[in-house]
Length: 615
Image 1 (tube, helix red, strand yellow):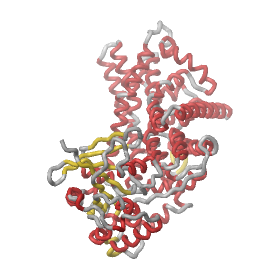
Image 2 (image 1 turned 90 degrees about the horizontal axis):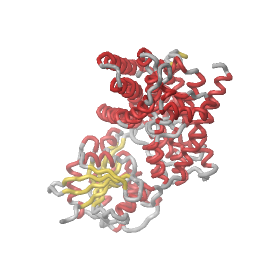
Image 3 (image 1 turned 60 degrees about the vertical axis):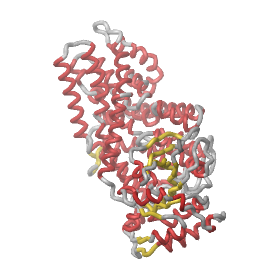
Image 4 (image 1 turned 180 degrees about the vertical axis):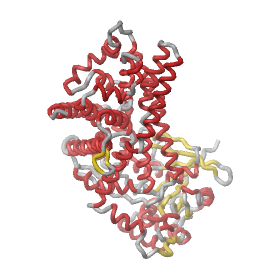
């Protein structure tokens, strides 16, 4: 049986390779890691015009074969046929950004020096035209000595022509002697400049709107103010916009619980549904609107091109703590979940930068903490306004996120001057073009995030909540005895409580920290289940967790619980990913220990100071 031919997509980051890969292969994709390397391998099947199948590999973005990061090292090894277990690609599909031609043609020369069958995809040609550039693909093809196909991956433009060129690529190896010699980087840049000019028929002389916007958004003084102002608006919106939807979901859960109590006789099954499933899992599901709104803004910033500019703005601040702007994207990704944030650190060239970023990523407030913050803030912080359009609850939420950011920067500064000592590395990145986000893409992204959240609620959170409910329900309390005191879970809480009592935690809070190690949101369902099981009558059992916290917790206790979750270690899955990315247990163990210490110290300080102030 003949081996399927292989083609590899290569190019600079932000050239649109992944979009082109998705457009060419559709759903016929397999995603895994390269053997022995924590770098994602994406492969898919491309059907050529003759009907012959071809395996297409989407390689990580690179600026050079002189690898500076694990991602670039994988690309170099695969293209050069040096990766064990990976066949050498017969065809190279070189993807370049039409709107940033000169920069991308520098790496293109390295690719063409291989003398391998190559096709150039002149991608995002529509954005180049929008910016006033008229390009001549034929002139560029003549200069490079290989076919050049204009494409717009996200709209499917040029895909048939590109597929046909790939099918004939082995007759188009770059044979010109100019690509055979090894030249210096300045020489490559000069050649790239001449080729880009030769391929540009006309360019708009006027400053584009985009350049004008960048002059404001990237201003070293105005830009950070706009960035933090935007973040402030986001956290205000998380409360203000989500409240009607969250209240509706909470009411629906309460109505269903009441309906179940009304139609089912007392007993194990009814308690399982009302106290375990509805009180526990339902208490987390009601925070879906907050999660969706947070991700809406994150996706909007990514799709519009603003996210990369935020990274550029943060470079100066990152350099102050020994990191570079390259750490900003992984840390920003950690607002969604620390797992992709830690994995995104692979693109950081400097190993000490990369390690520091991994170790501080859990300090960024992931979306799993949002239900914890939301329920405690709603219970103990008044829903009052402190200024035009500024709610106190949103302000507290913003302060919690800010505390995580400041904590991460301070820890990074300490690590870069002790365990990961070294100078900050340089930071070079391309600014993607501004784009109007497509409604369809935003909808798909939000659906995926909502699905992941609900899947966690239906799997991990459900299983942990039911396990906790069983531990809370047995053995049964004697008449007049608290169910929490009599249960196995109560005994566990009694053992842990003396350690946490000095920082203001009650038994229910101490107990909630244990299942929260599976997923942070479980802290909410654990509290809800505990209060539902321990309720003295059905009216109390029907109350939501927010009402019970408002009635039973003091303000210093609630603030201490919030402070704990600002610093507490992430879920077990995050720790496992950190072990994989650092190739051992040494650094994940250090990460867990220092985060527990910070959580205990700052929760204690918050409780003691709040108590001393008489709050």
